[in-house]
Image (cartoon, rainbow, N blue to C red):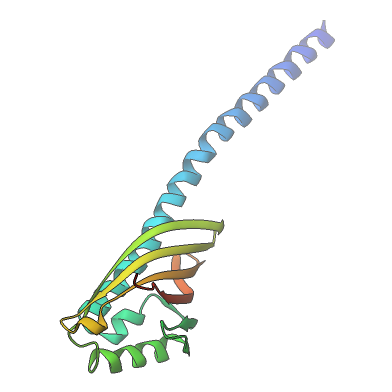
Length: 163
């Protein structure tokens, strides 16, 4: 009789273990999706910050979403290293050649390589009263997450040829 009771107890333990695992398996993707949605929103906010910085002609605001040691390849192929250099270079162009320009950026893809690394693509447009300064571009970002904060680790700005 005691062995039958132990068998039933063990069966119940097994049932509850399986039930708990199934419950966790069904809940975990919901948490993962919510985390992914929050991460994607933060990534998109970084891109919006670039637009705000450019359109308000504020180099520091433009550079804010970049990692301190970010790599930045300019549309003309030149290279800038670091948030401070990105801010300084952009303030220089905001005060001179691009002072009357605005940009629009539209995120076209966010691809998570790992939970803390994403490749992001955006289409961009710079508009100016000076026709020669108007330009379309495709932008590529590598963004990384430290703690809860996403930053731009690498940036490539590629001109789209006019046809």
